[in-house]
Image (cartoon, rainbow, N blue to C red; front, top):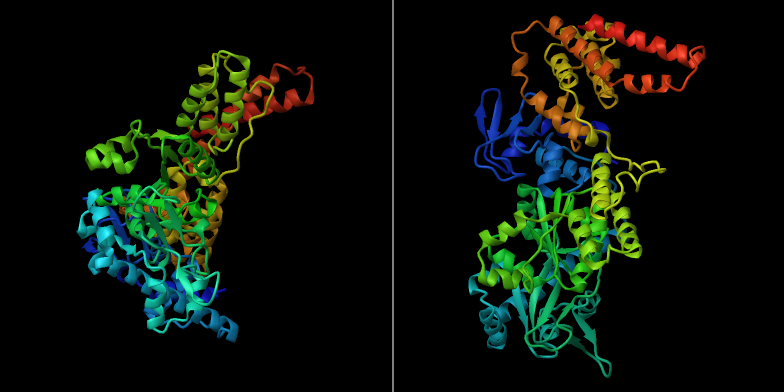
Length: 581
């Protein structure tokens, strides 16, 4: 745990303009600084930095936060990691206990292991680029239309047919072969002493971590022999369920486009990379996992599944779809022409034509329903039941109740069922969701906080009028903290104030109103406070369901206590509304 006072010190000393300027170019624009947003592609700057309040906000994509959250998003690291990174930049010492002897050995060992895999990557690359033994690999790539210029940036390599080429290369450089064996790059001979290489006579794809450090390899044969592909086994560096091929090359494009395309194979990934489509990752010979999605969520908000159109690819699409829906991420399925995969499609089509397919990608549940209808005889009861049993569990994963209801209605329509028949007698099972996701924060509520931040002299009136109680629940702690800062004279640390909400929709909306409150200049703050308060009261009254109260009256005796209670409530509502008009 990092002490809160150290976090505050880092936020205070890490000027947000200086931090952001390490990554993008900023130009002064009034009280703020302006630049091109690094989190989505744009040509006109909409990314704003407010140095006085220590916050940033993009009016194009809505992302916002403080210096720590900016570094988290740019580097794809955790909150503690971002604080420590900034602490080093600004000279803040964060006391940490010294590692134990065992921990230090593990750290040293990891550094050694990363160095070994990097040396192996250099060996394979050298064979492919310069060695006579790499000629089969160069010939194979040329036959598939892969230009030599792409080999180095993409970190392709070649493993020759020698049984111990890598073993001898590393041994000559003083590398302990026992360590190389632990990384799965070589295996002990079954008879006698010594080792033989795992990869032989294969094109080599380098698997790297998010920082671009090689951690493992994938190898493809150059003919039709089997297995076509083999991957490094799991090792202290390489966890298949958490590693995505190409993540290091894709993360910036994923941030900019806020989306990722997931493909199955190395050559599918290579084809898209060569076409200039960079927000692409591939699973490393394994099914998509929740661990993969946790990595993706650091950089992207939408997922496009692009798997083969055969039976195995369809199953992979359905498995991936379920996992993505569980994570509450928008999911789309890209459909290729029959007989094509990304590699074959881009061999005869342009990147623009591929982007056309991407633009037509179906929402995952649309794809799923059409697929189920095509594979079941919905003219029979058994066929309809099969579609319902497979589709409804996926629909229930949706957080938005309106979207769930629309899909259920569509299911009833395509199965020629009476509307409401699938939900009759059942209570809709609403999934829990972040409060800010399904509702939109009211403008008066946000404007009230911006007003209080700009005109602290209204704090006493704000509290006396009990305005805080009219705010949405998740804004009340923020208002209380803001009032406390003003009343104690401590000054408002906006960077700290928004920190708990920075990654939420509410936090993004808040950074937007705090970034630019010029609309509040030259107004009467006392009158504005009363206007916003009345607007919130109106909203509160509009949210009360008078129709449901009247409906309940129909089933009550006029002399029952509940009847009298409802009549009093309706009368009170009428009076309050007339007073506000």
